[in-house]
Image 1: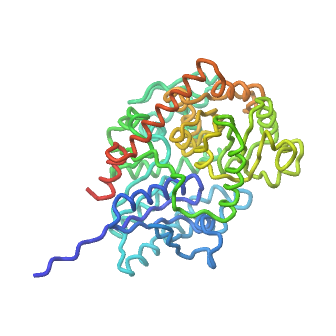
Image 2: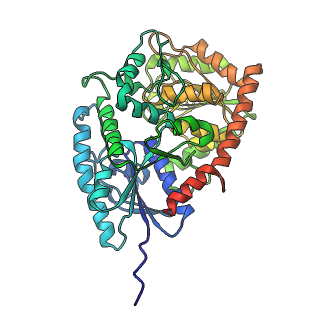
Image 3: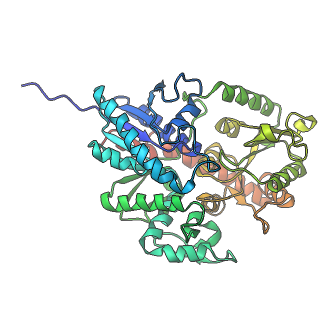
Length: 471
């Protein structure tokens, strides 16, 4: 009697089209493929995100093989991208869920028809409906949490009896209140993710709170493993703060500068320009500035940052969304291509991992998105945190108080970091004071611990291999 055929594992990674979500998911998918070359690995995001990665496709939903990954997009009903100025934010989740479930199910069915049935689905929190698709097709599913474990624990407790206490603390006008949650140290108001401050459906981002509620309800029902983009040394207490669920650290998941994952020709050319400029600067002399792909700074905040950077008298590289359009505003951006470029270079985009890996960079002014924080820690660059919303206040707290690898800026009554404050914080991490020396020493220690976590035999790498081999 012949032995039955062995079912080959086929991982399907599913995420929203947000840049900050696609990057860590795509990197984890590539690591799974590298850890266990025998299974198939497919990456799927919405058409709008797929076309950002592969802008030269003849058709925006065309499948692409990139390295070891097959990229197959689904539609969320917003193939040109979601635009809050045009589309109704309140109806986004409902439409994205309905269209996404249908089209992702079609993706899974097509893969099965080719003889490549999906066996495991890995999804992020804004596409929680992917769990329903996985169950409908008989595939196992696991949540990949791409924010800190501390934030996961805060949200879990929010939906399990601590919602009122968290909302009250987050909305404390003095910002001096703190809240005690099971398994976590006391958290100050300023360190809480902004979403827990929402108390009404009329408030912005209420749909995000609803999406999180659905995620945690599903976790309560099915109790699957949760993969977390963190590492034990950094968040051991938080990883254990929810004993009802198994949180597994697989991070830091950040792109390696030698990654084979594709970038567009514009990105490659822009990266070269930035690297060439950095090559002219002394070691650890450059201030790098970026607030991610979503945040649009107010004009006043932009002006204060510009003045603060000039006041440091240090060279700076500023990756600024909308820099090309704002380049016409001499008050806001007189260094972009102008005579001031010797001190500062302002660009629309840069390869952040390569920039942070460059020996000339000595400081990172960041909104403290989790991807940026992990990239800074793994590259050994001190942080000046300017958190804005969602998980960023919590990340800033981890950076300053838990890891000791940076400082968090103070803001004025309008939420703006003023020139003098920015100058003070840059000097705190780049100067010659005892605190600056301590911060740089902490950076080196955490870089080594992060490296050990993902190296062969490290805890995160071992966790990932157990997951990838299906043990």
